[in-house]
Length: 171
Image 1 (cartoon, rainbow, N blue to C red):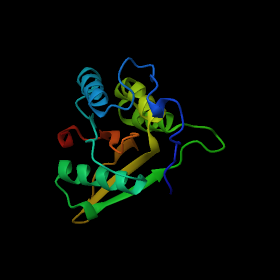
Image 2: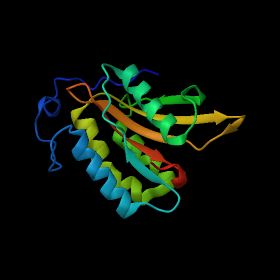
Image 3: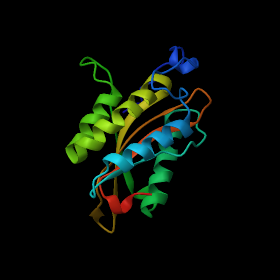
Image 4: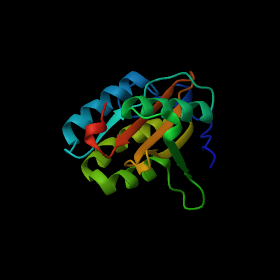
């Protein structure tokens, strides 16, 4: 499936305030918020991490950077991953942030709700926004699904959240 090009002409993407009190589309501000809420709302079974602000020019580059981060974090080869990119918007109008929240709720509702403002921030300021679900198969064993929301800042940096269903996998 193709990533949603959220459009670079939206007001938040050109530097408008996103309403969360932080700098719009600033990977460092978002990373600090994600770490804070993970510490407060994390359960012993799951956690979340900011995606590193890697350079990318499009959805494929963002996806490749996300794959590299997950591979390094989980110590598995990048080619072991399969990805399912979920559609956002469309006829039902569900946003990527609401899809992300829904999918995380199945594992950790407290953390899902705590991460929703950060997911909305990504959605309000980034382009090529998508929710992706990653699974790695190593030696015939399928690992837990890792759920991500990501996009690109107006300056071409990856911005996003990776949710790990196994806390032992957390970076």
